[in-house]
Length: 518
Image 1 (tube, rainbow, N blue to C red):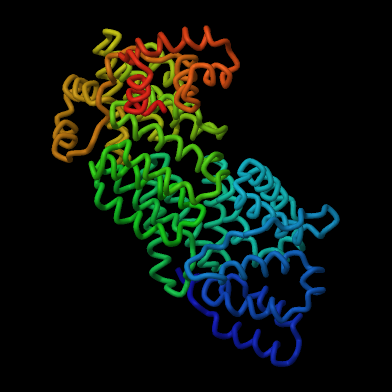
Image 2 (image 1 turned 90 degrees about the horizontal axis):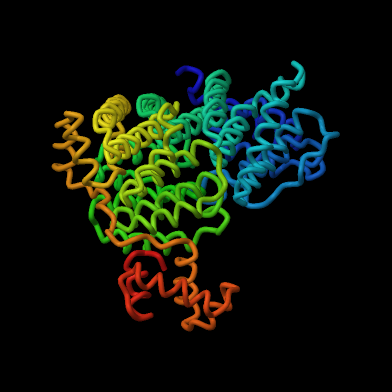
């Protein structure tokens, strides 16, 4: 990796010599010329040049103004990755293309910080398209910045759940970083690629990028304050192998530098602790809610982070056998791009299997079994196998489960098979003649979802009536909050009590809480 060597000493001397001569513009041009090496190994030099430049000079050169915000935030707090805390002025069309590209990127990172993930992703696409239309002169101007900008485009696309585009953008960023010697961009791109690919179950590719990240980070020890994508990848890969202790340890390393990735850290930690039987699943869910209470609501309720939280909120009650509560949580998933929606669909299918609704379970995953993302394909095949077996087609069910097991083994994601209810999983392991999986699941002590309660499920109207009663305390107040007559509310509640096996309001509310419905 010769291009990534630390050659910052010469540029550092040149920048400070220009500052000593009272020539801040020359200092800025020198810092920009050597930006790939300085932003990687000695970003303080870049900040010194930016701070010495007159405000009018920075204002007149959009890429320098964007660079000042980036490096100032990068160095503002130990361990804090470069995320802008405020929204920059939207880029004006009249600005020169190279400057507009940098200002546009600053703006989309600010939008991402505010959890406006779809807006940030749209701007990232626009920036990528603009970069491909630059003439040679403009491209030469922006070249020192480009790898850093490209990483931000990939991160914005990933946050919106646009996984294929994010992988493509980050791979391009890694190539550009290698071309110009930007070690910081190279480390961040490799780390984020490893995490995104691990999230989607592409284990071999994730491991390759993680190895590249680690080699580059070891080669460039002065490159610090990068976000913790690689640590999240390490945690996800350990959890996929059902190495719960290793996964929890990696999450502990990731947390101090997570910032916007902290939502993923919290969700993964909750799931790992539940599977490790550290506490009851519903207790861990309550602890997760406490952890998320410090996170701005938009980050929890939108984009890929929102989908990750939804899946955690659903999987935890499922691990406690509360599959109605799991489905209710999945129904609250925010709008997100197709890959994340597919993971929600496979978890819905697993809970439908547990509730005995094989037909709906089959329908929920039938189009996902050939997904290019291994985790989605494995979970979908496993759910379809369970649904087919419950419908009496054990031969096809066993064939689907063998395919799921082979794909899981090839990608190192055995954990993806354990989203099924324990009885269904045991039957499929036996019928598919996969004793190694039976031994793994039994020996690991990993918590697998139990079957659902045999009591009938509540309808949406009944669930709404129960929650209204819990919130208001009286039939009259509940009917008013629902906007229905007292007689209608009473009818819904009477059937709700029956389905919960309760005869009084207090019994119904207690059972609803036990099931995680209120």
